[in-house]
Image 1 (cartoon, one colour):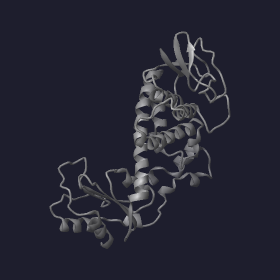
Image 2: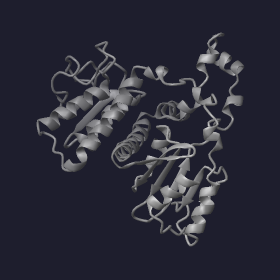
Image 3: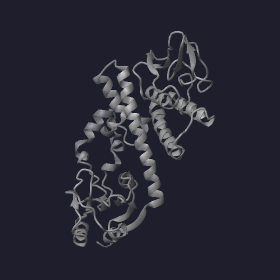
Image 4: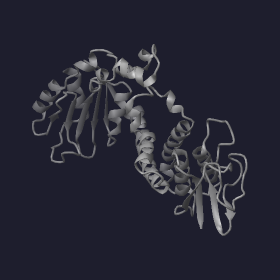
Length: 342
């Protein structure tokens, strides 16, 4: 029997370590997971070594056992002060070494580089947060950070206390989803770098794509483009999105100085804690209105279905939420010309 051992009340480092080993070690996909008090080992286990050194697999009776994030073995980082590694980081290094030694076969070689980069980013998040570096995030006291996997796992432990197996299964689902998210993001980054068509509008820089990857829209907006256009080369649908108002649902008024002061208990530093995104950057974002684009595109291609969002900052021709919309016959270049001239 194959067993992976980690500590009770597993955190993301423990869960991530188990996920990596079960995902990539041949024959370990169905390994059972057992829990011990933090720092301890499964009864009968004697393997200890410097972190990252040696093979973590040991025989305990008739079982093959790997300890992660506990027990001071090859895949436990608690015996050292290096904040650049963790249990998951050590597990990932171990897997990469076995791949380099061709002890783990990679079947989808054309996708492997993107997948390796995606997993490396997931692991880096786990390493950083295992050493509490989320305190250095931009606006670390903002409520939206509670919507990360960190906040979700903390809440789950309050909702379902002492259910370690449940936390691991929940974590596996989240990590698989995160892997796909990062793979898609890496693809979007490449699309922006290699295939984005940059052009000027009355509101500033815009970027347009012929791509099936919808993630380019949000990512390009985060990068500062005032307008982003995507045409789906398969279905012909078009999505045009402008930067939203930077007031963000009036959160500025909801989070007052008094609230922040009570939350942090330090007078005199409140101004530094307020998210910069709440500060009015310019009128340009506020003034973007796609009504003229909507009217002109409807006139040029009246048979297509065009939907102008109430915010006037999103113009859609096709969406998974409404498969009955009729795709435009206009080319991406024609749409760009409309947006450049309104």
